[in-house]
Image 1 (cartoon, rainbow, N blue to C red):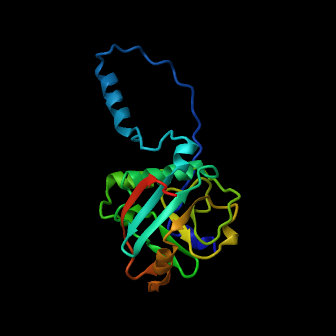
Image 2 (image 1 turned 30 degrees about the horizontal axis):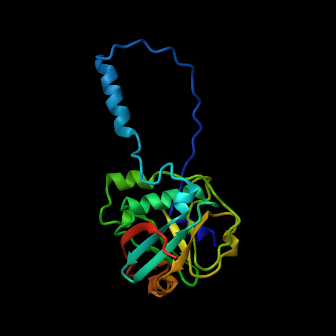
Image 3 (image 1 turned 120 degrees about the horizontal axis):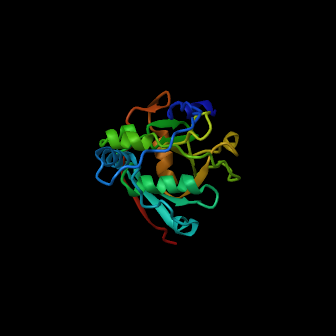
Length: 221
């Protein structure tokens, strides 16, 4: 059910802000202390540029992501032509090591394994917390949610996907045209099956399988 994909992602509250007219700023000299302070503040809050920001569809399509997990290796091929921002986000997460040491923290038997919960990382802290708060535009496409598809998890709120993703080990037709399918497992679906078959309490694995390392590299035919 869609509701089981909601729990792990949190709820995003959207606010509409009305902008009042602002008087023209008073000109400041280059040495003005307030100007310098504002410049430092802006630089500190600007999001860091990531490796695949601005990358073309062709460049992203040529990349595969390999998960070196405790249960074996899973290799995922990208589909940026149908979900470019979801692919860009996934490639950035993998290439910046944000997914390293995270776990598949949710399992629905015969259906999905879910990863991308940055709070399960051994490196969890302020930077990963900020990264987990960044949201993606919705990209529901025509790709069917069948076994082997990788898709973004989100809440019922629009544009609420962030870092959580799931790999289908069974078919999920009720997800079609609602979630952003952005990749497909090209090698290692049996590893996903093994992770899905592990012992759980409800949907929580008793011994969650860790992604030791995520690697981005050109796909090898």
